[in-house]
Length: 113
Image 1 (tube, rainbow, N blue to C red):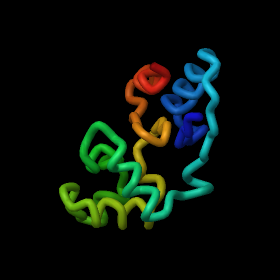
Image 2: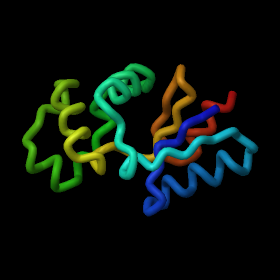
Image 3: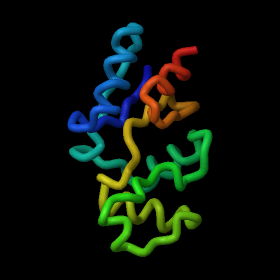
Image 4: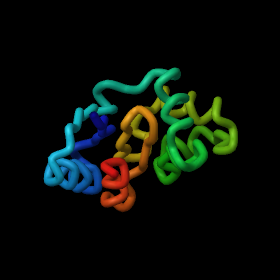
C-alpha cells in the first residue's frame, strides 16, 4: 500500500492522486496539514527519499524565509516542518521502503514498479 502525503488544494497533489487511482494503486491518503508527521516519521521519510532532506522543504514559503534555517541541517529541517507543516513538499508518495516527491506528478508512478 502507498501512502500519499496530500494537500487537496494543490493541483500537483490532486494530479498525483488521480494517476495512482487510475492505475488501480492501493493508496492511503494522508492530509498532512490535518495530520502532521511527527519527528520520527519525518526522519524516516527523509531516509527513504532518493534525495537529501532539503527536497522536503517548500523554500518559497514565507514561513521558511522567516525562520532563516539551514537547509543542510536535518535537525533544522525537521524542526521547521514540525512547526509549519505547510513547508512539507507535496505530494509525496511513500511505500514504506521508498518515497518519491511527485514533482512532476508522474514521478509517483515509479513506486508501482
